[in-house]
Length: 427
Image: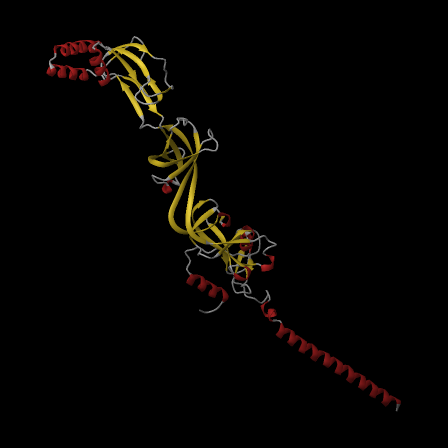
């Protein structure tokens, strides 16, 4: 009887144990089902997701269709998966971290782009303002005034006195005909004086004074710098000899060297501002008067000529100047702050700021740059946002993720087709 009671208790205990184990197993199965249903991310774990491609973080522009070792570096290729937003060509940053990372953006603007080019220049003589003094007749140098090459002369400054024996005979004949009263002969004699090279002022002086004036005083017809003085006391001069040369200083030329890459943007008549270290705080204004046809083969620069007024005569050839060439096309163009541009040496990029904290590298074609602005020829549209601070951090992150900036030549259709292909969808 006691044995039967013991067996019954044992059977009851075994039944209870089996019931508890079954309930626990059933509850665990239900819990697993609930967990699987409530956590869809388990179906997209890295082990189960399909990689779009593999890449080497050091060479993200090269994509591979299967895993393995990189042919560039001794390291395993990294898989690239589609992002949660379905865009694998953008870097996603939590908007709350934007300020902590120091990211700043600017708007792509369309407007008139006034640019300037800063170059150096050197003052030179105005070669159009030159006076060459030659002997009109043969004679002898009797006196040379105290002048030397390099002196600054006033207009009509005396240079030398020359004795002209031929003039003495012609003037004596002219005075004799004047006393005879024959008007026709007097006109012929006056014409002969002119043909001997006698200045009209000297002929009038002889006619008024009635005295022979055989001396010619060489004078400078303009004010300027005496460049040459080829007369000495006692020497003989012949007709046509160059006795002196004077360069005027009423205006000077500013010779400007322009790099050949900027030569196409320089035009005749372009406004110029010049600042000389010799005169701090003074700004001179002028215009490009000529663009010389030859390029310096050593420096690969083109020379432009600017004419500057020099009424007070203080601008002297040889002085250097800092020159600003102002350029205004009058056309409305797209531009961004120059700090937003990332130059890699082979191309130029900007980080395009999109919605929901996404940043996409975009390849752009650049135009002129001036005053912190850079013209965008291709790659962006008006109103878009570009990163101006922290863009190098984003570019590095994009490189590590294998995100390559798209060229502006790629069409929207091509971009959409590639995205569909990467996601495994059918268009």
